Length: 292
Ligand SMILES: *Cc1c(COP(=O)(O)O)cnc(C)c1O
Image 1: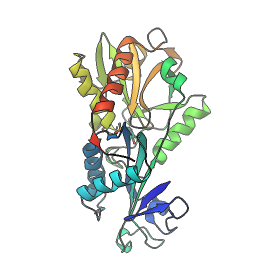
Image 2: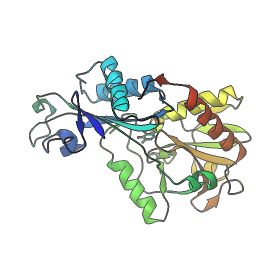
Image 3: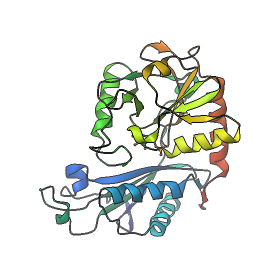
Image 4: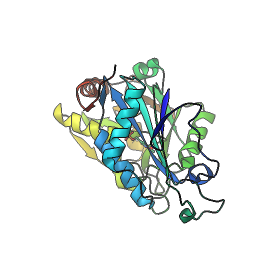
């Protein structure tokens, strides 16, 4: 395995970061998860744009241009000879002292790109659907740490995940500070009602997922209307279908929420249609690269 570390491709053993890196000390940094399918990087520009937007928001000036970042991502994929991959791009503030002051991180930021394979959940879960549970930990307030920033500070989501697992579920439904449905720990949520899609507006405490936007786009192509709509748990409980979207999880059906069956308790026809269409577009859309 070759890992991109500050401009160089190094082995897994050599890919180490200082304990003084503020990414390690404070979660001070930003990241992206990206997938490639069949030698096509899916929504590469969108991911790189969001990475730079997250960085801009936390006043982290990435030392590489977007073009260089894209080249580094492709180079890492090629070096690992991966046709289908999950990539993690991490940019942290870099090495500083034990204080918070980011100005003390005088050297460059630490840029890491890892290309690997992951299956987030077993195949059966995609066929049978998963059960999720609403957790007490609410999503970060947009006024505090805006969920639009894909930051390394992931404790909010991890606490929610722990609560879900403590209750025997693999995924948590997180509400925003007003009590409306926000998202899951690393995935956006959709519900289906009377043949149409509903997902929470992104400004209310969820990350604007690239998979989410891809689903809205592909749904339009197959004449399924989507709406950004404030959702309460009630709307989720009475929905006909429900599914989650994210780069790592892709599209996964949800069949039970807080003990309530969704629809007939099996992944529904619209979810299946969207999943199939998604699979199809990922195989043909994206930035092409070649491997040996
Ligand atoms: C990354 C992420 C998502 C999913 O976004 P994609 O762009 O679809 O991968 C959703 N929620 C959170 C909190 C995330 O970090």
